[in-house]
Length: 113
Length: 113
Image 1 (cartoon, rainbow over the protein chains, first blue to last red):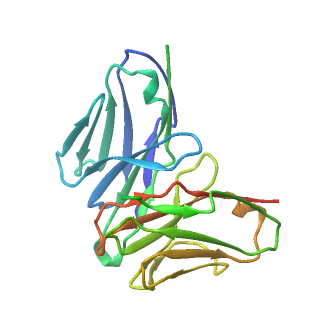
Image 2 (cartoon, rainbow over the protein chains, first blue to last red):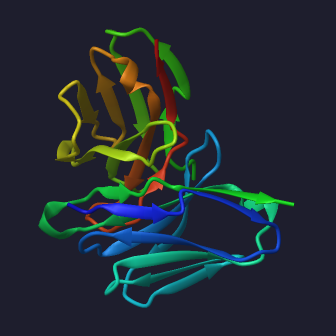
């Protein structure tokens, strides 16, 4: 059974600073997803990482995947207030007929001026 | 493209009642998954429907049931509601096989009193 752990669960950072959110998973995951959720809203897809060494960047966010370490990171560069949200990573494993996404508990990010 | 749409957006039910939530998938998508997100937690997989059949189920009791219609839309039914069923219910749609990216609807906020 795939398990996903994120840390930290809460992150308060100043505008302009850099930080990294970590996502560890327990068994083989052939896809790793990052989502953003604003309060009371749905999940917005940020990145889909498919293979070892994959790196994707969008604006101030960069995600990477290390399948050997079973680790994905979401790096935030020069944070701005608009990035305040909860960020989830989720893994999926299509083997043995499994189709579900398994989510971490989320990292609540607050960017303060 | 309307994306994934869910109805209603909010509802309040009394313990013991039954509720039906509805989801229309994104155009071109034939697979619908349902997730329950309790406050402050990551989404938990309830089940997935493909070709009008339940393809996979998470760790939820039989009080949770679903249906998929020929037009790929789906319903989630919950019987004998408990206070603990209060949550945001998210529908996600995707295409066919495992590994295709899931897109989430805006969710239905269910409150059980």
